[in-house]
Length: 256
Ligand SMILES: Nc1ncnc2c1ncn2[C@@H]1O[C@H](COP(=O)(O)OP(=O)(O)OP(=O)(O)O)[C@@H](O)[C@H]1O
Image 1 (cartoon, rainbow, N blue to C red):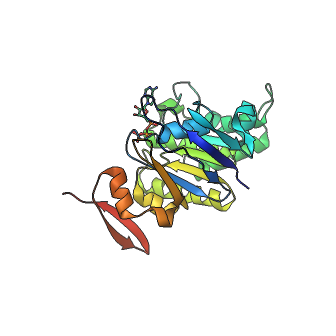
Image 2: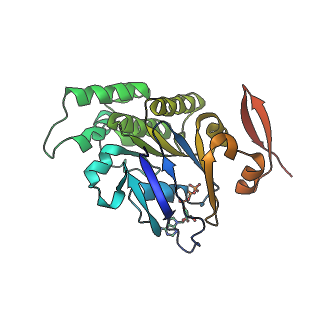
């Protein structure tokens, strides 16, 4: 069963030719990495899959139903989003922010219950921000905010995670912990699509990758077949060398 699928999807990037239309099928348990240079359209793709940007052409299905025919509340129960721009200016505490993850399941005037609170507190613990729960989010560091945003989606517990640069602002320990969380979610049957700048995170953690080129060209498939040095050099216009560490490829940029 596909949880999220696109048919002949063309994302709408102003003044860019349509390139290759995307017909993707994302299944439970898969972790997709979206790779490509700056401006290739990774964020635009995520926004389009979330129904926030209209595509130029083609369609998106969530649980085999057209996204355009689903109510926003239903979409919010199924899709969790971690995006780069966040409205953190609103004066909410870390705990209040995590609890927003429960709103798609509540009626308009319903208050969060004990179960909602327990889920939020467990998520804050998992992301190592429980000690900050009474702090206003707009007083946190970049990495702390990123972890609160991920904790909010963990509280939401969606079937599909769409995450723009999950390790943005994170130190090495928290990068590793967040990627392990993404893998855990996949193991639990969730589907994840992550925009990544780090090839080595993609090689280590993704089951599938989508390579997006600045001219709208694209190709996709299983990570072990797609992460070929020659294809990646063309993608980034950057020479690479590959070494193996613990059985996994590690890509290193080289000059010249
Ligand atoms: N509102 C807009 N008007 C005009 N161009 C836009 C608009 N939004 C995005 N773009 C352009 O669309 C292209 C794709 O942007 P997008 O943010 O999706 O790229 P990206 O692959 O996520 O890049 P990065 O790696 O830098 O985050 C860029 O060239 C960007 O300048």
